[in-house]
Image (cartoon, rainbow, N blue to C red; front, side, top):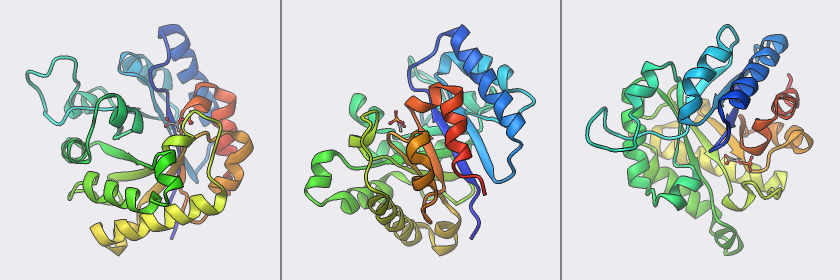
Length: 253
Ligand code: PEP
């Protein structure tokens, strides 16, 4: 089963106009030079940079995504942005259910599923994030937690074409710590089984499951070589062109 590797950058709340545009241009230039057919590239800047990043990546195969959206198409939701608005300005993807949103904004599986359903209906692809805390891992609850999150936050209209799962152990995000390669593969294989239960085997076989959490050039090769790891969702290292591209080089086929 060939699943095209996805290298996705989550810029989080980083970037002012000048450096954000320079970063997007830098990534686009390298993506163009690399001319990869086996790998897709996505950047997810903050809302304020989406339009200028879109211009900066024009003509390269770099895709554009946002980091969140509302479930409604429009209306009285001060401060929110709808999936239709993201689609309208050229986004192809939206990240949903990142652990920082689950923690900072109290997002539940139910809310994430609602957002994901609407985003898919609006024509976006969704990257749904799941992952256990350090305490949950220590208590041996990792697979249970991920199962509950998938069952609750992946909507019924998800397919392998419109949905990507990102396994991001909360304790590995921005900490420099990562699970061992065996641990990552164990969780990814379990996630694929749960997706199969929820959406059928065909979707599970084709659905991309990214690893996220302190992925960097030095550990990318080992992680991206795992059979059930289909790419990376990269935070800190996506803010440096050289690191982001070096991660993708680690999975050249
Ligand atoms: C993330 O927040 O999605 C992430 C994986 O961050 P980092 O790479 O910095 O750990």
